[in-house]
Length: 114
Image (cartoon, rainbow, N blue to C red; front, side, top):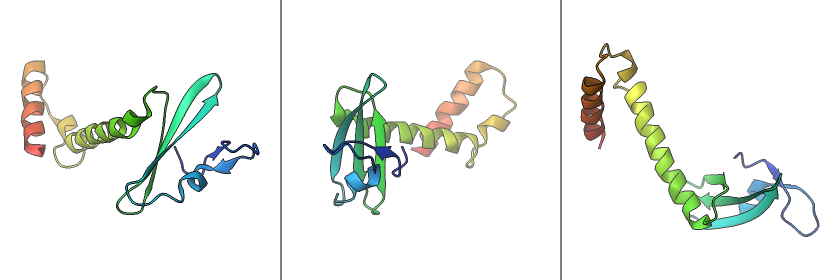
C-alpha cells in the first residue's frame, strides 16, 4: 500500500494518510492497525526500516504477527525471480524446451544465487 493512502482509524472519524499513523515509529518498530473495508477485516502493518523507510503492508490474515514476515519471504521470492529473468541470468532467453532440463537449469541458478 502507498503510505499516502487515506484511512480512518481515529474516533473522530476523520481520514488521514497512513504515514501519519506510522510516523512516530522508531527503527525496526512495528505497528498494526485494523480496519473493515467492504465486509473484509484487514490488518495494516507498518514498520520503519533501518534506512528510515516506511514499509506499509495490508493483509486479511487473522495473525497480524505473520504479515511482515510473510511479506519479507514474498519479497525474497520476487527478487529471486527478477534475478533469474532479467538481472543477469536471463532465463527467459534460454532455448531449452525440455521441462526436466529447464528445471535443472533453474535449480543450478538458484544455488548460485544463494
